Image (cartoon, rainbow, N blue to C red; front, side, top):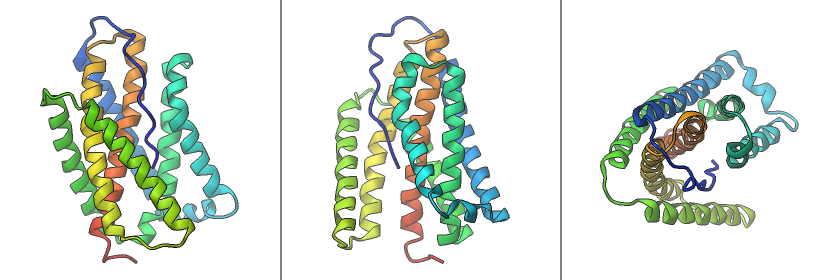
Length: 232
């Protein structure tokens, strides 16, 4: 899953209601996860998912997701908060369609347990990111570099048809997103303390998508670890 680069927010200043900004961010992040889960459930129970498995539809879904993820930084500068909210909703829905495939690969009980473990894991990282006094920017940068290296390695291995342990990849990916998530939580806390009004509204959606992507990736890696020996 994509995780786009940091946005330069150093030029913004001023006093803001930090709690309100954080509430907006985590509300939208939770809404995105819920919308993705409901979309996947609907696709799975109705069988509509199979209509998105034919022709160019899978590729189209991926292109939409990558386009929104990488275009969000540009939207911060030019789009309204309403437009950003619509893009976020579209991203969550298309991701829900794509993630329906895990219901076919893994047993529903394994998926449910992985989701609960991911939620607890994520909440622990939120607590760490909000309470630690250490600057996590260096850790976050290193983890993003490691994530890019992991993605490139996986692509190369796929091209040359070289096998690699799914469990090993999952452990490495989970460790990388542990650092990235804690960093994103700290960034969110800092941003909301230094923005206000419409600027804060847009940053709330921006960071909600960042945290949403963190959670989804953590969930997928934990699911692969728990379900490595329990696949349909």
